[in-house]
Length: 167
Image (cartoon, rainbow, N blue to C red; front, side, top):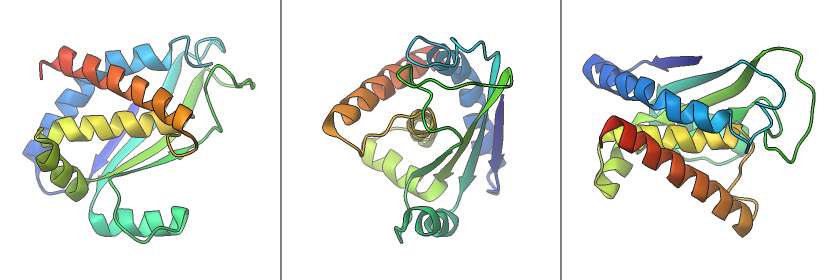
């Protein structure tokens, strides 16, 4: 289950993103319940995640508070579990697993969409996938090898989503 919030005034743009987000769920679920993660092995039947879009002031404040970096970033992820990768092992008590929270800056996403020559919605989806991989335990900042692993999965998932949606 996905919990989505966006406090922007642009309902039309939000509705379009939500439409694409819903269309991306099968590809996301395929990865979440794949052999790459421990979730399927632990008989979890459902996962929950929160996605919020915010402005630069909010994400800058959060980035400073939680990461000690005083600037607006594109996406922040707050995972509830150290790692859900198959090389980890731990016990789940519930069949529904809350993964954590992902927060994306609308302004940074719009800027990056222009830079990458893609739509705003495509960039939001890409940032959501990036944040999701972080809450699942992937981290491109710890080593070159980890960066390659995370980038590979990110590219595969985004390509599948773009194909499913028709981008």
